[in-house]
Image 1: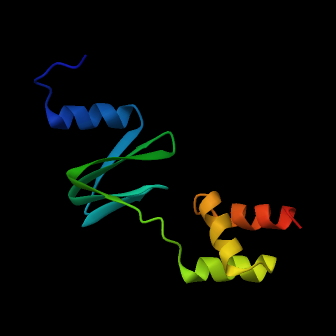
Image 2: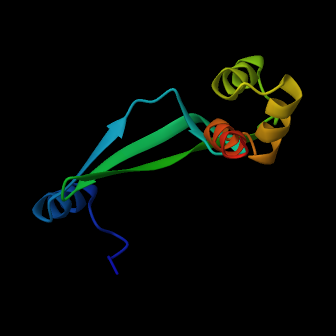
Length: 113
């Protein structure tokens, strides 16, 4: 455990000795996209930490989470139809069954032939 009163300059020197480099990143917004949500961090404070060649990021700020709409675009359905030759209804059903994974929908429809 580090003493609570450690000087920031001493902390930076210690980190350098350990091969750890930190750098502030001037970011406007940070977006993280998952399968079901989009996490948006506004007014972020981002620090990039490099240790043994690996980079990691520490992010803090105003967090907002948006759920993704499961509606499929016409382009996704068109692609599935082009690749498999199925009807629009079959393409939509396969896309829903695969939770929006276009590749899985195409594979499942192709295996059924």
